[in-house]
Amino acid sequence: MALQSPRPTLRSFGTPTWGGLLLLVFSLGWTLPSMAKTADTGRGVTTSWLQRTSQAQQPELIVILPRALQGTEKKACPEGREVHTVDEELVFYEEWELEACVSGALLAEQMDQVNAVPFTHEQLDILKHKLDQLYPQGYPESLIQNLSYFFLEVTPEDIHKWNVTSLETVKSLLKVSEGRKTDPQVAALIARYVAGGGQLDNATLDTLASFPPTYLCSLSPEQLGLVHEDVLREVRPQDLDACRPLQMDVLYHKARIAFRNVSGSMYFARIKLFLGGASTEDLQALIPQNISMDLATFKKLKKEALLPLTIAEVRKLLGPNLEGLKAEEGNSPVRDWISRQRQKDLDSLGLGLRGGIPNGYFVLNLSFREALEGGSHLLGPGSAFIMIPALLLVLILN
Ligand SMILES: *[C@@H]1O[C@H](CO)[C@@H](O)[C@H](O)[C@H]1NC(C)=O
Ligand SMILES: *[C@@H]1O[C@H](CO)[C@@H](O)[C@H](O)[C@H]1NC(C)=O
Ligand SMILES: *[C@@H]1O[C@H](CO)[C@@H](O)[C@H](O)[C@H]1NC(C)=O
Ligand SMILES: *[C@@H]1O[C@H](CO)[C@@H](O)[C@H](O)[C@H]1NC(C)=O
Ligand SMILES: *[C@@H]1O[C@H](CO)[C@@H](O)[C@H](O)[C@H]1NC(C)=O
Ligand SMILES: *[C@@H]1O[C@H](CO)[C@@H](O)[C@H](O)[C@H]1NC(C)=O
Image (cartoon, rainbow, N blue to C red; front, side, top):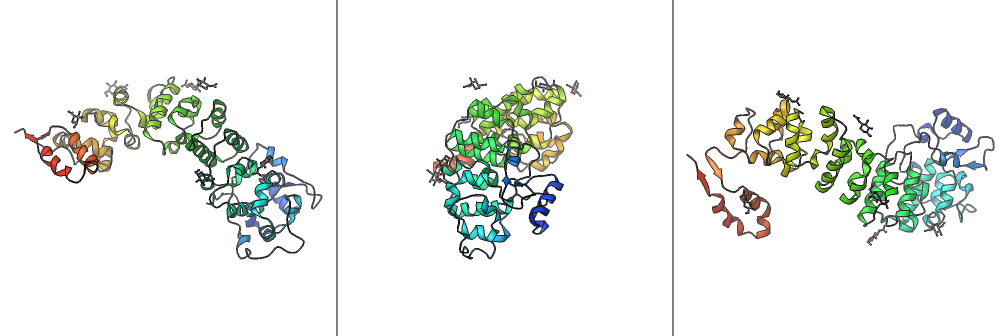
């Protein structure tokens, strides 16, 4: 659950005094996510708006199970320190006191106050821990809609437990996330909302366009159709890892439009991330351009699109990268493509590829093999025996 930041955390500096802490923080040039404290008063006047409203450099989300919790869980709340309302006094509570004196229910009820008080990272960790204890199955939607800046404290794993049905909630959480490195959280939020049947409106899609497109594979094909073209120019390979074929189809078509003003090898460099949505005809159209497709791209092609390509076409498509086929011969979709080729023709490539149609045999209908591999369990155990004679129906050509 920890998103470890490469930056030093406050904890690694021991326990500085307030003044020392402040100097340290500002000399490092970054602000605590919910603490900006005036140095002169020692206690009392606190402001959090500085960080809340700042779109400047933000610290990454640091989520660490508080060390303070270890061994302190059992301590009782000292007399006179009981907490009935969330206010700035809590900033001066020791971490173990927060653990002992604050209830998750109070935090959930007064979330707006939690956001108004300039707690330190460590204190927020403890408060989050209290909420997580209260809601081990995930926060209720009534709390999620009031989270506001506290959203920056939750992890994608937390969010995947949530039910989010309100577009207003999505919008409010996107708003607090803007300008921060929270794209995994945003992707998780969108995934939960879409999984619950939620529809994104154009305004929300526009807002999303300002985040790294980690969320793309969470969108339905229909919603992907509404994504702005600019988003496609920002896509990184890992953003598409979770996309399913129908999503890739939509993305490929959008990408073609987005990159229509790019030509030659630049076009291929841009479109190749999306070729998992390309048809056989699309691939055939790329062949004359001598693109020398890399194997990483080749093995992400749609199986149905790849299978009809001839050996000559694949040779041309891959160019000098053809040798890479050998390493992929056991993996789909390369394996499936190989199984459609005559072994004699594969041998002519000189790569030692195995698994083609044996020399001298001609299989009448290749889909029998697929039916046997993929469908026999549906037909029941006896069907394999019925199919075998059919498979043996091969013509010996010579
Ligand atoms: C959320 O905030 C609204 C308005 O501040 C409040 O009426 C409501 O009770 C809050 N919900 C929860 C679960 O605290
Ligand atoms: C989410 O909804 C499901 C189905 O209604 C329910 O079983 C589950 O408890 C809900 N989870 C949360 C965290 O509210
Ligand atoms: C949302 O955007 C799509 C595509 O850009 C457009 O066709 C549709 O009319 C827009 N919907 C609204 C409500 O503006
Ligand atoms: C293509 O169009 C986009 C958006 O209009 C622009 O950002 C990009 O620079 C253009 N590319 C080329 C090669 O003209
Ligand atoms: C591709 O290569 C062939 C043969 O080397 C050449 O004739 C053709 O002009 C090339 N096509 C492009 C678009 O570079
Ligand atoms: C092979 O048979 C299946 C049905 O068993 C059929 O759908 C398919 O079109 C046939 N393929 C060819 C190439 O004849």
